[in-house]
Image 1: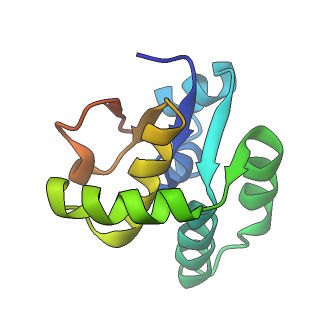
Image 2 (image 1 turned 135 degrees about the horizontal axis):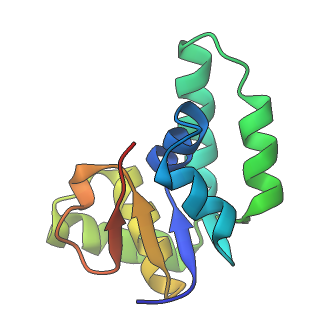
Length: 123
């Protein structure tokens, strides 16, 4: 595995909602963290639906990680990976971001279970 970690929205939400979880300890101790800009969208949408202020978490994410925008290369490769791995669009884009940056995806989403370079975490 690699020292570079890419966190998806489920990992960040575990961090936010479960302050005593191993996820929080892991994130606090990690070196380089990447986050797809798509996770910002997913988190803000989820927290707004829950009527929670998303800004503290979004601000922390932007300070603690490098935000990666989907490039043309990510978009085109993600289409192939979506078909190969049976992933939804956003999951495929985040997973492809991880692979192209030679990182390990840290996620609480079981849709990624069994894929290479993925670490499944839970509360």
